[in-house]
Figure 1 (spheres, rainbow, N blue to C red):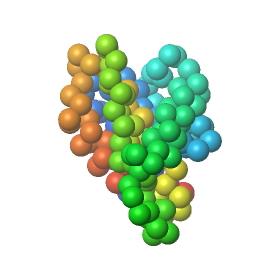
Figure 2: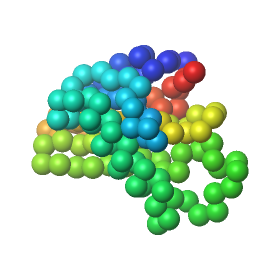
Figure 3: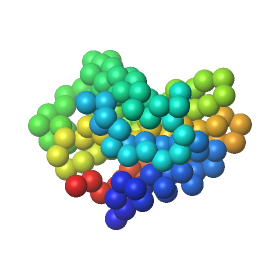
Length: 132
């Protein structure tokens, strides 16, 4: 089972990948990055990504209904997709044995990337990721 570095390198093999990071969406800290960062600053990108993730995770509209204690170990949202004129941003929430407060942020070039393939590959990467 791959750790953070191996998982990030695996995600960079997705066609069109420009950069990928593992972000704690509670604190806004980047736990690891590979490739380019949107805006050129990995820490600022992680903080902004975390803010977007928190909005989605804490939304009563988007979060699953009836989350109990057992559900607290599962991410509140599977993924978020943001499209811009020249890129895709795929945020995949990662389930962990402790609190599920991390996500993978994959930045794809819109001309070279395949969003459907990236979503499948990032989900597989997230499922295999070992933290700790």
